[in-house]
Image (cartoon, rainbow, N blue to C red; front, top):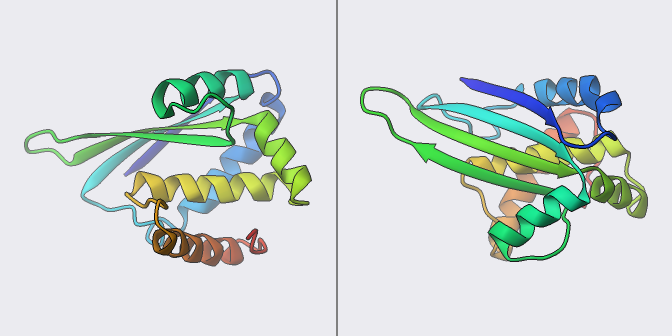
Length: 154
C-alpha cells in the first residue's frame, strides 16, 4: 500500500498542485518497476518548498550548505505482526527545479516527473554513490520516463 500527501511550504507551488498530484499517480502505475514491495506499507510526504527551506535541511542532514532540487528521507519501522512501514519525506525546491529545467531545456513537469521517479528509487534502497549504481538507477528511470512519453534527460 502506498499512501501519500502533498504539503506546500512555498507560495509558488499551489497552482501546480493538481498537476503534480496527477504526475505522482501516473508514476505510481509503475510501482513494480520502482521496486515497491507488498511487504511494506509506504507513507510518503511530498513537501513542495523553496531554496531557503531545502538548504536548511540539506545543511542539517547532509552537511551541504546549499540548496538542491530534491531531498529524500526514509524511516523504516518494523511492527510485530504488521507489515513493515516506510515513512518518507520527499522535499522539492521550486527555484532549483525551475532553474535546472531552464538550464537543461527540459519541461518543468517532465523534470519533476524524473525527480519523483528518482526519489521513489531512493526510497526503495537504490543509491548512486558508485558509477555502476548510477547506471542501474538511470536505466530504470529512463525506461519509466519513456513509458510516460518523456525523453531521456541524461
